[in-house]
Image (tube, rainbow, N blue to C red; front, side, top):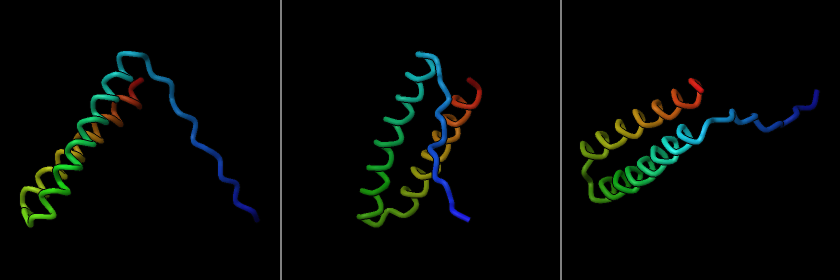
Length: 68
């Protein structure tokens, strides 16, 4: 049996929701850079705090997408 890879259809979101999603994506990007810097200099506790914040933002983003 051959596996068929098909893209997952994106849910359409309104403009306001898309703007919020974009803001969250930007925050995630910035926090990811911050976590990498903390990790490089050995600030493990600070890295974990930032990673938890990233996870919260990802959950917020998912809620925005699924609520639409």
